[in-house]
Length: 540
Image 1 (cartoon, rainbow, N blue to C red):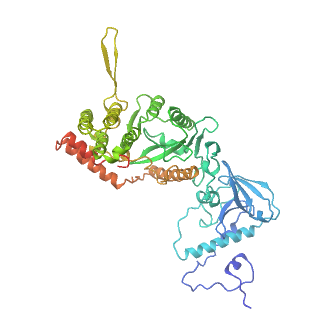
Image 2: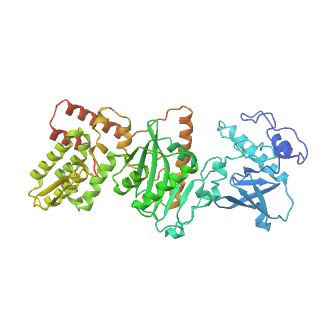
Image 3: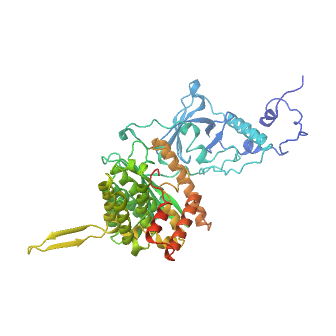
């Protein structure tokens, strides 16, 4: 009977020799024996991650094949693939495979030929795929092992570390159980590291055993170094992006060309001055460890008084604060909710318009904002004086005026009976939120200021209060992408800012309105109304 040995049998030296396979088919393999590399150069003590015939990713070392068992903050544990038939063989490796140690011995001999067979089958399968479609460009990343040559397995069969070591499918297909309380949350192993080809520390700080309010900070040394070169820092605080067991997420960003990239991420179970001081004290301490200095002179952020006070205390009283337009509109919306005016905002178009006019003050010239506030007060008196909600609406207007425009008036009586009046400046000076000059000058940073919180994320989840490990996974992906962007930027590439079309259109309309107002084409009241009609607050 004719010998039925397969092409694989011939390559592996099994069975009798037979004629070479038919090469007249339309899809053929190259004539060179592409598996010879495995047979001639295979080093059993050079650790490699390989893809088995069934698609599983395993560690090959010392003539044995291991499956992933578990991962910790510093090590990965592997068990012999024959553990289902009683072998207790186990090794522990570093995250980069540069240090591998035996834990338990095997009850069977090593089988280098089995590893060769696994690699050969993977190579043949890959060649079959390549015959039908172009070969994808996959970067080969193999760890250096002192005294051993690099693995010679093609990139198609040896996966990159970011894909097959730190985040092996078996390790992350199922996220760890979601903690019900913060005391149950442990962040270690793959969740504390980056997804880069050579994994690096990503978890910068966790005060789990040090304080009642939990603070978890993620950042790499490279991103801290990049941040230290910037004098302007963007800071966003978002309750909705934080995992369910945390109260808020803090995102620290910086400009890279015309773009803004996130560099530091923090989850906190509370807010207030102590959290913000702890966060920036940790960042400053780590910068000192890296021999870099963080010396910003401007923060673009929301209207958080306690956070601003901490920043001025840590970085100097002269540090500037500039608020995002998004934060200004959010402040008005949150004030509407706190004063129980949501239903009035839904039912009354006039009230919605006057609320938007408050935000529209940001587009008046700085020296005319005070007059614009007076115009809004006159409109309020004319439209709402007879309504039952007049006093509450008045409280909203006065609150905004005190914090953002006029400030607070205080007074005390002197011993001689005279009454002395003091005018205190607003908590947030007009210069810290006014956009008139930037809008007319077509300042590219206006788009960054108009954007909402989290808009610079690529992988940010759209879920509200996401599961904690899913949120960390998103941050790991974001960190990897930002690292690639910074590397390209350092090589001279100009980052392309992806700006939403509605932001571009809105910016153009606002610039036209500001230009018409400067040219005297309409009054201050008409200007505020026109700008207000291009602004949305809350759900309206």
